[in-house]
Image (tube, one colour):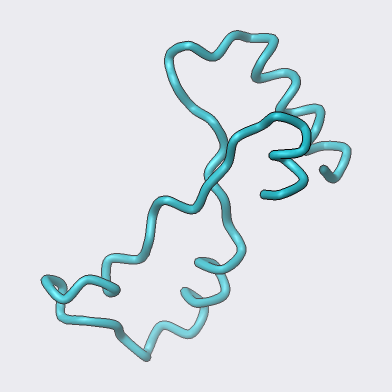
Length: 66
């Protein structure tokens, strides 16, 4: 995320697994791969004001390995 930010691309980790929330019964320990996935994904920009050029720039940066 830091590398993307250096290239003026916002990113975040905004979606957490539902079992983090007590309303869903609390954290489960029988989903071992979920921890790895949750720690290694990011959310790239996605909104109505993005242009085709914005998308192309983000794709180019990601393809270069950030």
